Length: 144
Length: 50
Image 1 (cartoon, each protein chain N blue to C red):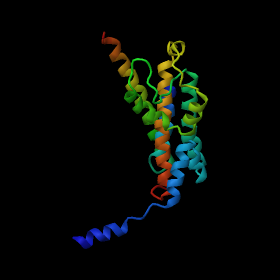
Image 2 (spheres, rainbow over the protein chains, first blue to last red):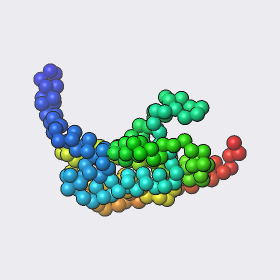
Image 3 (spheres, each protein chain N blue to C red):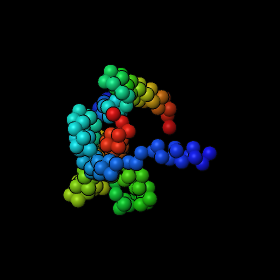
Image 4 (cartoon, one colour):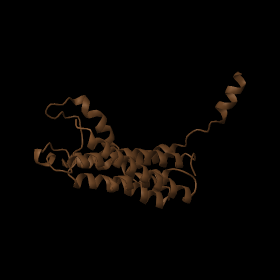
């Protein structure tokens, strides 16, 4: 029994160090994780989808979330959508630093496309998490 | 909704399956599911007054 478990443990190959690096890069710049592995089509399709979704979201007047509680809501409620938004990596960080897409503007919130924009921004982050995992799996040799 | 479905279907299709034909089919299936379910939910909610 112990011997069988030990044999199974021996069969598990360790994750190569560069896979973690690729994963981090894939999160930070959508599509770059695949591009570094010369998966150009995947990089264009998956990374392109994330970038497109993000900019469509901003164009529609969407709002990104951070820990600053807006009027009538608690900070804790901001955490789940913030985690989704953070998935866009550098796009989120740069927008946060420049103050783009974070303002609580009633005029912006009154736009018909405001909620659609929010959804596109959330989806951009969530899709980039999937893209990141795909790039990691390829780098780790778990996926062709 | 169509734009959203296209973007999600591209990522799902690119990630899944082994060969290109299966990826295309899976992407189209995901796209169709988003559209059909979106329209169905839209009509369902249209008849619910609250």
